[in-house]
Length: 200
Image 1 (cartoon, one colour):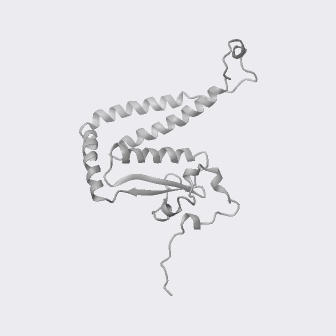
Image 2: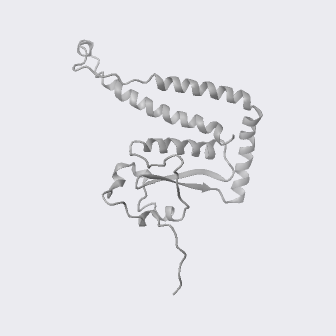
Image 3: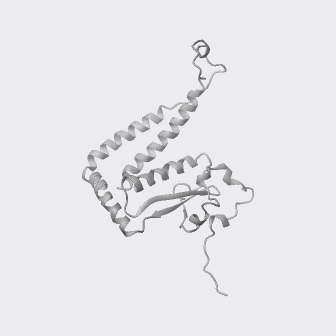
């Protein structure tokens, strides 16, 4: 009989704390481990992102994890084409955010991506001050735009004009629209964040 070296448990081997059974139902299905993704997940190296999520991630706040890792993945993979990186995979397990680097290992693919990276990143390095100035303007606009989102309390009844002008829309719909705008602009800010972070 041979002894195997101790290891951390795979996601599907880690039992939830008492009382937390069924925690998965609180998060989007694509952020939690599943039977379909088990083999892929077990082959990867995962670590808890306690720098950004030191106390776990409340279900609503998983929007933050989505925005962050979409941003880093997009700029690593599709925009600047980092030669050896395809961004990060993300999972939520028992309320904690785990990430796993997605590496490029094929030498030919690394070379193909290196040529794109040299051209694209090189443009940013050659024009850094100008592009950074534009970035600051974009971020200032985005912050001001977020500050303008409001959720005023609704009156007991909609104004009579909703009826007399046949608007066909409740004034409450503005709350829903502003919620979507808030989330969309939050995602956009994380895109801007990674425009410069990895290159810096």
